[in-house]
Image (cartoon, rainbow, N blue to C red):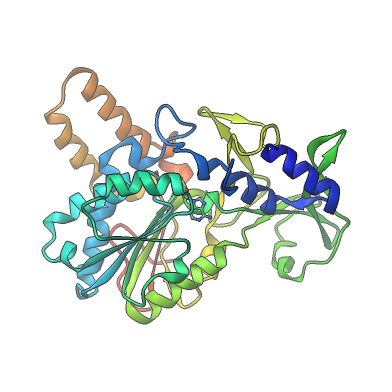
Length: 356
Ligand code: SAH
């Protein structure tokens, strides 16, 4: 039975499922889940990411992490962690760039959170010379100072959608209509936890919540607050989620999320305020557009330097990659960067304190 058949049978037997349950099944089902069974990144895949676009991304992230480690006294050993490392490209670039920082590599123990057995294999190949430990969740990280990066991880964590109905909320759920998977709505019910969102959500408007993010943030908070370190979270989204951002991507194009469960990448924008609130003992930076942050870190100079050794088509594609990462009309503004450190600790390079 295909995943689609299994999901339909389950809904027929036990009723509609939340969008979060549906996303989790589609992404991580061991037999047919999107991430569980394939490497979706790169040109032949369904989408590409900043580290796959240019080595400069990982180099600048690596130097920012290393500077932050120096600013906090260069503790040894420390956990150099990544959530959802994809092919391992970002960690490989971080590792290479950080070779110029005395002591960093000797002190670092690499910890990766990856759910997909298929991608763990790709990471193991790419990172075979690094001291790597894999985890199913951040909750098993060691009790050590923690420098962490998450690029396009939180958008893949399942969301639930609530639609405002007067002073109450109806949940958007996945049910069956004429034998096909289709969105439906539960009856309105009060949601005290969403009380704060009545003020900025119009009648019929959608609020997205991401229950799986809070335990991850709590595990990060615990280690950074007590041992030091910093977390850099990079993703598409904004300070506060607004409206329906659930999307399916297949072959670099938008697709129907219910047509073929497991065949498309399902994501939603990241609500950075919710992540910061789930780690109240940490100090959050101002949320910074990716393009602005990379420019502050010197991507302009690095790009010019690399361009000197390139010619023709290679040079053109390098310049296009630089634009793609930074231009406000491309990834530069859609993607945001948030840094979290212990209260009173210095923020990593390229960040300003939060306004509040
Ligand atoms: N950071 C990488 C890949 C982003 S794709 C890059 O920038 O290229 C999302 C990654 O998160 C994949 O590695 C995927 O397998 C992993 N992932 C998705 N959901 C996960 C979960 N619930 N737990 C652990 N890893 C997950």
